[in-house]
Image 1 (cartoon, rainbow, N blue to C red):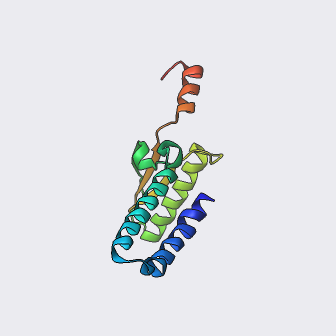
Image 2: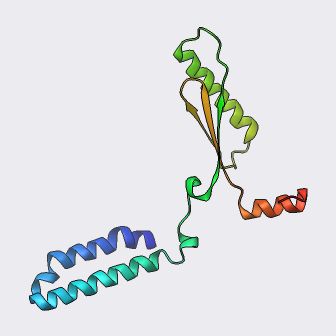
Length: 138
């Protein structure tokens, strides 16, 4: 419901205000009404993102993580189509071995003709607590 309100209803109300209601007032009252509408819109937007820790989900770049680039040994004399196919097959094999259930937030993307970038986020709090309990490490 929040998404519907902020993407459809609130902009529609602002357009109706600017297109019609605003013109019915004298210049001084119009200025005061404009300030009130802008302030109310700002308050609604701030309420929409409060508290930010629960409403805004950080991406991998802001949460932190590790980016690794692996080089793949390609056969000498292979053409670019063969290299591309080998790279795709290597990524598929790595995904099946590292993340067989597909539950980890890993991305593996080809970089050029002979490299693979693996991006892994930092573990969350529940993973850290589990590791401390099982392995006795932090």
